[in-house]
Amino acid sequence: MTERDFVLNGDFEYPESGVVAWKAPSNIALVKYWGKKPNQIPANPSISFTLDACATTTSIEFSKLSEKSNTFSFDLFFEGKPKEDFKPKINTFFERIEKYVPFLKEYHFTIKTSNSFPHSSGIASSASGMAALALCLMTIEKRINPSLEDSYFKKKASFLSRLGSGSACRSIQGDLIQWGNYDAISESSNLLGVKYPFKVHPVFKNYHDTILLVHKGQKTVSSTVGHDLMHNHPFAKQRFAQAHLNLDRLKTIFEEGNLDNFVEVVESEALTLHAMMMTSLPYFMLMKPNTLEIINRIWEFRQKSKTHVCFTLDAGANVHVLYPESEKQEVFQFIQDELVVFCENGHYICDRIGNGAKEMRIKNNN
Ligand code: PMV
Image (cartoon, rainbow, N blue to C red; front, side):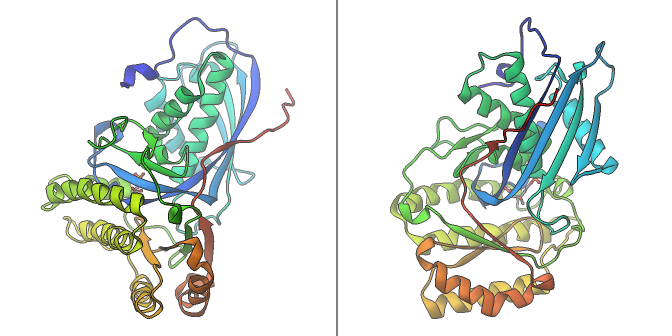
């Protein structure tokens, strides 16, 4: 598919008003996206587990303006309160997607959004937030054009959310999503996330992700800046090639269920992501001392217990602890006994691999 396939064309009658709502999950990359080209095109393909508990719920009430506006007209409420400082990000998102959803300036929108995870937990809400918003806009598009097919709906939601935040395009569906051109998956695309099409061993069903909140404050360097620093990065070329090789390795791993190899690819990807940060110019570090403490404890415990617990990191200090359902009890006990002490205020979130976003039914009072 090309960008042109996502432009809404035709003579439609616009509904006067309505309300739509979606709950979209976060996701955790196994092979990381780090580095991009213009228009949120990834420099390398990535793959992620869709999460379940960490999610954003967004509703949009829309009412038709008496005449088309020159600017985007919307109010934004975050956890029940007006949130002016989120508005510029949404405005930029609307600017980027306007040519694909030409009805944006026909309406006034009241956007209400909230996260299932605590605010300022250091968990990025941009993926789940942009996915929920894009899905709401797609439901409005479907009200305008009821002939829209479900598969196109999901593709376009992923396409639009990518323009808000790259990794958001992996938060529409579950449970394993691939994004970015990758030779082995013919339907893969730089424009949107697709469901991983090959065999996945049952050991990966119900995989757990316990997120240890090591540092709940703002990140010192945003992912936008981090992605940019991959331009002229001395190791960029090797890193982008490595992502393809790790996807190749994962294909066999998913098929055979070899957890030792899974651990190796996933941890190597996490450390490579942070190594890229540490070797860019300017260099920076998002891991904290407790991130390293946790990693070392995981390595010690894995050796001792012969389990397959492993870690991954996103662009921050928090640690995602991954483990299969069959090792749940032993690993969770270890987390409580040895790792929770390294979390800020002892906080952590129990999550697991999930099935993607869900539409929420809310009463239409209009
Ligand atoms: O979607 P962004 O621009 O916030 O970038 C996310 C990058 C990582 O979380 C570090 C990796 C990934 O693939 O999700």
